Image (cartoon, rainbow, N blue to C red; front, side, top):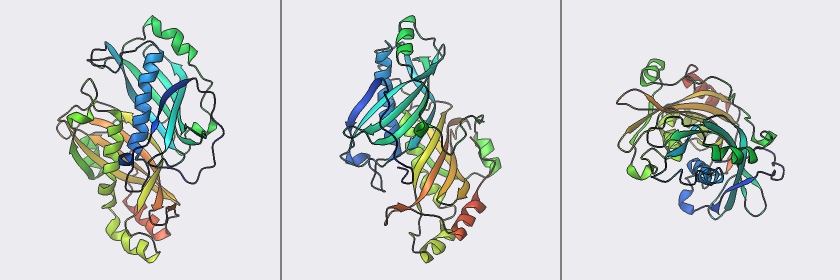
Length: 325
């Protein structure tokens, strides 16, 4: 998923830590033909292991580890499509850290020519591995954390269409039903989707959010299809993600159900914004919250397009304004 409207980013800055170097597999690509958004987060996740090693937490992602790293929040911008066969390198550095957390900035670039694919701002909590309770950094990590510091996020990595300072208000099943946010997906977390400690792998959050897109489309496709067809556009609109924010509330384990409630909150021009709550239908608690900005995407012409006014009106008619992060 990539933003085709952005201008090229400048040459790679001197980010101090190499965090991943690898290849895009064809099976990681989605129906649009480029790497699915969940695998962008998978690359970041693998990079956190390199970061843990660099700050002397060498076993942080192994089952016997006393402490590990869990993401609290991720902001991700997509700059260019990754396709099967592309080679990519992830580098990063420390923006700031507290007694028990760290904020990282990461960039995923072409490993050969340095072209920018994605940028990340990630808040990681240092936690006790079994309980996930916050755990202070050991003394051995302090000097490496300082050594990896960078001077802020470059312009091309900053939030473009999201306000990251807005307070997040944890969703719930009760709130979703009160707002009328419909169910867009229902699934169970499989053992293969968990980490060494039995918690959901972070990238699965995006996987379930992506899977719920079809459930969201059915809220308005019947109305929109004739309008899109009359304009020579595919009757079922697709979307290419430009930017997203993910807030992790609780960590599902194998066997837990995940019920997605997804709704449009705004449509304007070439883009629409939607939000999604990933909820536990057994308790009503919130697992994960998402905000995503996508471009309307014509899969046949492989281009973003401006929504016809009639289509935009349908999207905004179905928008749920109070459905917040």
